[in-house]
Length: 159
Image (cartoon, rainbow, N blue to C red; front, side, top):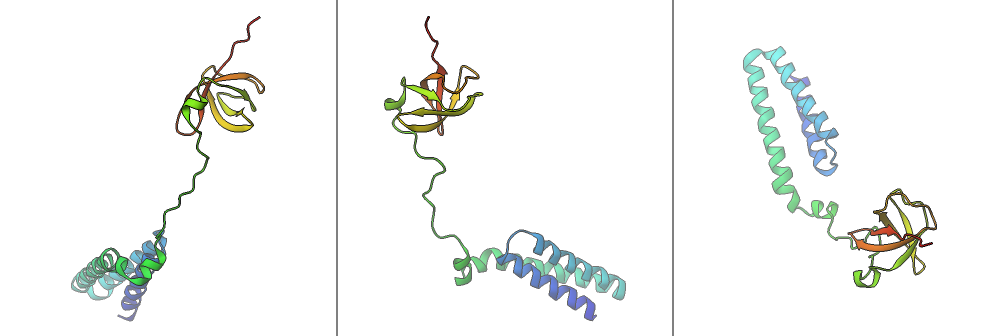
Protein backbone atom coordinates (compact mmCIF):
# COMPACT_ATOMS: atom_id res chain seq x y z
CA UNK A 1 0.00 0.00 0.00
CA UNK A 2 2.88 2.35 0.82
CA UNK A 3 4.41 1.79 -2.64
CA UNK A 4 1.13 2.68 -4.36
CA UNK A 5 0.74 5.86 -2.28
CA UNK A 6 4.36 6.84 -2.95
CA UNK A 7 3.95 6.36 -6.72
CA UNK A 8 0.71 8.38 -6.74
CA UNK A 9 2.08 11.22 -4.59
CA UNK A 10 5.31 11.42 -6.60
CA UNK A 11 3.32 11.38 -9.84
CA UNK A 12 1.04 14.19 -8.66
CA UNK A 13 4.04 16.25 -7.49
CA UNK A 14 5.69 15.84 -10.89
CA UNK A 15 2.44 16.83 -12.63
CA UNK A 16 2.30 19.94 -10.44
CA UNK A 17 5.91 20.77 -11.31
CA UNK A 18 5.00 20.37 -14.99
CA UNK A 19 2.68 23.38 -14.62
CA UNK A 20 5.64 25.60 -13.72
CA UNK A 21 8.33 23.92 -15.86
CA UNK A 22 6.78 23.15 -19.25
CA UNK A 23 8.27 20.68 -21.67
CA UNK A 24 6.15 17.58 -21.01
CA UNK A 25 9.02 15.37 -19.78
CA UNK A 26 8.29 15.89 -16.08
CA UNK A 27 4.55 15.45 -16.71
CA UNK A 28 5.11 12.24 -18.67
CA UNK A 29 7.26 10.84 -15.87
CA UNK A 30 4.50 11.77 -13.39
CA UNK A 31 1.87 10.03 -15.52
CA UNK A 32 4.08 6.94 -15.82
CA UNK A 33 4.52 6.84 -12.03
CA UNK A 34 0.77 7.10 -11.52
CA UNK A 35 0.23 4.33 -14.08
CA UNK A 36 2.80 2.21 -12.25
CA UNK A 37 0.81 2.80 -9.06
CA UNK A 38 -2.31 1.52 -10.82
CA UNK A 39 -0.46 -1.60 -12.03
CA UNK A 40 0.86 -2.30 -8.53
CA UNK A 41 -2.66 -1.84 -7.15
CA UNK A 42 -3.97 -4.42 -9.62
CA UNK A 43 -1.21 -6.84 -8.61
CA UNK A 44 -1.65 -6.40 -4.85
CA UNK A 45 -5.40 -5.90 -4.48
CA UNK A 46 -6.86 -7.50 -7.59
CA UNK A 47 -9.54 -6.08 -9.85
CA UNK A 48 -11.36 -4.10 -7.18
CA UNK A 49 -8.24 -2.43 -5.82
CA UNK A 50 -6.96 -1.76 -9.34
CA UNK A 51 -10.27 -0.25 -10.40
CA UNK A 52 -10.27 2.03 -7.36
CA UNK A 53 -6.67 3.07 -8.09
CA UNK A 54 -7.56 3.72 -11.75
CA UNK A 55 -10.54 5.86 -10.74
CA UNK A 56 -8.37 7.75 -8.25
CA UNK A 57 -5.67 8.33 -10.90
CA UNK A 58 -8.22 9.65 -13.41
CA UNK A 59 -9.79 11.93 -10.80
CA UNK A 60 -6.41 13.24 -9.63
CA UNK A 61 -5.37 13.80 -13.26
CA UNK A 62 -8.60 15.69 -13.98
CA UNK A 63 -8.16 17.84 -10.88
CA UNK A 64 -4.54 18.54 -11.85
CA UNK A 65 -5.59 19.60 -15.37
CA UNK A 66 -8.38 21.79 -13.98
CA UNK A 67 -5.97 23.49 -11.58
CA UNK A 68 -3.34 23.90 -14.30
CA UNK A 69 -5.62 25.51 -16.87
CA UNK A 70 -8.29 27.25 -14.77
CA UNK A 71 -6.89 28.17 -11.38
CA UNK A 72 -3.12 28.48 -11.80
CA UNK A 73 -3.15 31.12 -14.61
CA UNK A 74 -4.94 33.53 -12.25
CA UNK A 75 -2.35 33.28 -9.47
CA UNK A 76 0.43 35.73 -8.71
CA UNK A 77 3.02 32.99 -9.33
CA UNK A 78 1.66 32.42 -12.85
CA UNK A 79 1.77 36.13 -13.62
CA UNK A 80 5.37 36.19 -12.46
CA UNK A 81 6.35 33.33 -14.79
CA UNK A 82 4.28 34.54 -17.75
CA UNK A 83 5.34 36.96 -20.45
CA UNK A 84 3.75 40.33 -19.95
CA UNK A 85 5.40 42.45 -22.63
CA UNK A 86 5.61 42.13 -26.37
CA UNK A 87 8.96 42.69 -27.98
CA UNK A 88 8.95 45.31 -30.69
CA UNK A 89 12.25 44.09 -32.10
CA UNK A 90 12.76 42.99 -35.68
CA UNK A 91 15.23 40.61 -37.23
CA UNK A 92 15.94 42.98 -40.07
CA UNK A 93 15.45 46.71 -40.55
CA UNK A 94 12.64 47.96 -42.72
CA UNK A 95 13.43 47.87 -46.43
CA UNK A 96 12.26 51.40 -46.95
CA UNK A 97 9.80 53.18 -49.17
CA UNK A 98 9.05 51.09 -52.28
CA UNK A 99 8.76 54.18 -54.45
CA UNK A 100 12.25 55.27 -53.44
CA UNK A 101 13.84 51.86 -54.16
CA UNK A 102 12.05 50.50 -57.22
CA UNK A 103 13.77 50.85 -60.62
CA UNK A 104 17.06 51.86 -58.97
CA UNK A 105 20.39 50.20 -59.60
CA UNK A 106 22.21 48.14 -57.00
CA UNK A 107 25.48 46.20 -57.03
CA UNK A 108 25.75 42.54 -56.01
CA UNK A 109 27.97 42.27 -52.92
CA UNK A 110 27.84 38.46 -52.93
CA UNK A 111 27.01 35.93 -55.61
CA UNK A 112 23.25 35.76 -55.97
CA UNK A 113 22.36 32.12 -56.55
CA UNK A 114 19.53 33.25 -56.71
CA UNK A 115 19.62 34.93 -53.27
CA UNK A 116 22.41 36.96 -51.74
CA UNK A 117 23.24 40.54 -50.78
CA UNK A 118 23.24 43.73 -52.78
CA UNK A 119 24.39 47.22 -51.90
CA UNK A 120 22.42 50.39 -52.54
CA UNK A 121 23.47 53.81 -51.22
CA UNK A 122 26.05 52.19 -48.92
CA UNK A 123 23.49 49.89 -47.31
CA UNK A 124 23.30 46.10 -47.70
CA UNK A 125 20.01 44.41 -48.51
CA UNK A 126 19.08 40.78 -48.91
CA UNK A 127 17.96 40.22 -52.49
CA UNK A 128 16.49 37.60 -54.80
CA UNK A 129 17.58 37.65 -58.43
CA UNK A 130 14.98 36.75 -61.05
CA UNK A 131 17.71 36.35 -63.67
CA UNK A 132 19.17 33.33 -61.88
CA UNK A 133 22.75 33.27 -60.68
CA UNK A 134 24.82 36.44 -60.94
CA UNK A 135 28.36 37.07 -59.73
CA UNK A 136 29.45 39.58 -57.12
CA UNK A 137 29.96 43.01 -58.63
CA UNK A 138 27.15 42.64 -61.19
CA UNK A 139 24.86 45.62 -61.79
CA UNK A 140 21.25 44.87 -60.87
CA UNK A 141 17.92 46.67 -61.18
CA UNK A 142 15.40 46.56 -58.32
CA UNK A 143 12.08 45.45 -59.81
CA UNK A 144 10.04 44.53 -56.73
CA UNK A 145 10.06 44.08 -52.95
CA UNK A 146 8.60 41.39 -50.75
CA UNK A 147 8.37 41.35 -46.96
CA UNK A 148 12.07 40.82 -46.25
CA UNK A 149 14.10 41.33 -49.41
CA UNK A 150 14.49 43.13 -52.69
CA UNK A 151 13.69 41.40 -55.96
CA UNK A 152 16.27 42.27 -58.60
CA UNK A 153 17.13 41.42 -62.17
CA UNK A 154 20.49 41.66 -63.91
CA UNK A 155 21.07 44.66 -66.15
CA UNK A 156 22.22 43.50 -69.58
CA UNK A 157 25.43 45.20 -70.59
CA UNK A 158 25.09 46.84 -74.00
CA UNK A 159 28.05 46.55 -76.38
